[in-house]
Image 1 (cartoon, one colour):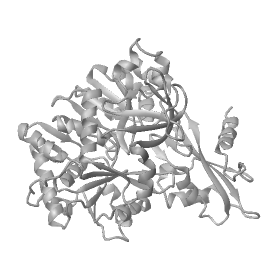
Image 2 (cartoon, rainbow, N blue to C red):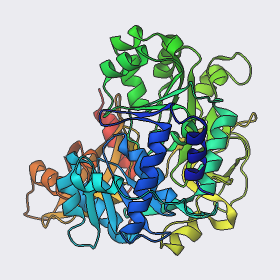
Image 3 (cartoon, helix red, strand yellow):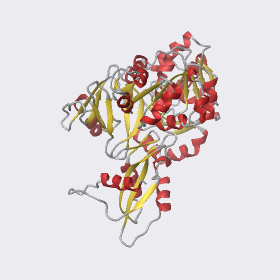
Image 4 (cartoon, rainbow, N blue to C red):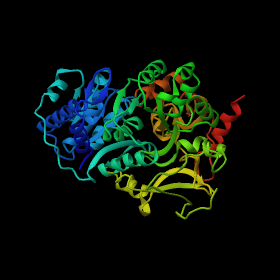
Length: 505
C-alpha cells in the first residue's frame, strides 16, 4: 500500500471537493486522481519500472503534487530537489540515484537540461506539450506497493560535504502523517494547507496528512507577505509552514496585524533557531496557534515538538525555557541524549540527540558506511547536540559542529571549503556560521592565500556561484594568516567564531 492508494480512496469519496489550487492548476480531487493515474501510466509507458527514481526539480506549483503521487501510483520513488540548488548539485543527485527522468518547471528548464546533460536522464518541463502528452496517457492501475517500498529519496548534505539520499519508505511517510494527527491537529476536508515554502521540504512533506483527510491545498510561488495575507483573508482553517526566518519576517511586518488570526488554524515552524523574543511577538499577534517541530530529513520533521498549549500554558517548566526548547518526543518516538559511548547522560547535561521510531529512514542510498554510522545500535544519530530536562523537554545546545542553518536551510562548511580550495591562490579555508538577526546564521569564510599570491572576493564569489547554490555562498570573507589549530592540526573553529563575535559592536 502506498499513499497514492489512500488519496485515490479520498477522491472516490469526494470527487468534487477542491484538492489543489495554484497559478497553474485548480483541481478537484476527482481531477487530481485522474491526472496522477495518467502520469503513472506515462511513467510506465516510458520505461520506468517499480523502484526507479524520478527527480522532481520544480518551483512551487500545483503540478508538484500530481507528479509526486503519480510516482507512487506507478511504484516509483520520487526524488524532490530544492529549486534553489545549483545545476551541478542536481547533476550529482541524478548520477547518484540513477534517475532516468526529471520533471521540472519553466523557470528551471535551462538549468535542468544542463544538470542532465551528462546522463541518460530525460527532462520534461511543465507547461509544455511534452508534459501535456504525459497527462494524455492512458491511466494506469495502481502498483501494489508494500509499506517498506522506497517512496521519497531526501537528499540532505552530510558532514563530508557530499549530499546523501535518506531513503524514506511509505511506512515512514505514513507514520509522519499519523504523528501529525496525533500531535498537531485533527484534519477534515474543511482544512486549507497554504504552501509558501519549498514543496521539496517541510511544506510538501506535511502536505501529505492534508491529502489523506481530503483537505484543500493552495500553492503560492513563494513567500510574499501581501499575497499570504490576501489568501488567508479568503479562507478559514488555514495551516502553513514557516521557517523561523519566515515567521520572523511575518511578525515584524505590518502585514501581520492585518491578518485575522481567527482564520489561522496552525503555523508550524522549524528548521533552525527561533529567538524567544520573536516567538513571543508571534504568540502575541497570532495567539496559541504555533507548533514547533524538530526533525531532519532522516526522520522527516518527526522527533520532538512543542505544541500550541506549550507555547502559552502556565503549567510545566518556565515558559522561557519551553520557548527556547523544541518540545517533547512526538507520539511513538523515543528520544535520548547520549555521550560518545551512547550512554544516557543526566538531565541537563549536553550530549548527542538520538531517536528511534517508525519515522526513521531505511538508510542512505548506496552509502552503507554512512548508514551504519547514522543508525548504529538501531538508533538514528542526529549529529545535533542537546539536553533533556527532568520534564522531557529537549533543548538544542548546538548542532553538529560544522553545520550552519541559514534561512531554514542546512549548509555544511566542508562543501563550500572544497569549492573555494579549487582556487589556485588559496592555501587554507575554513567556513563558519555567524549569528544574523534575519537569517539565523550567515556564512563567513576565513581564507589564507599562498605566499606571494592574491585573490579577490569577486573571484571567490564567482567560483562559488559556478559550483554551488547561491544561498550557500559566503556572505563575507576574512583574509587572514595561518588558521588557528590544535595540537592535532585541526582548525579551531571556536576561535574563528570568537573573532567574529569580537567584531560585533
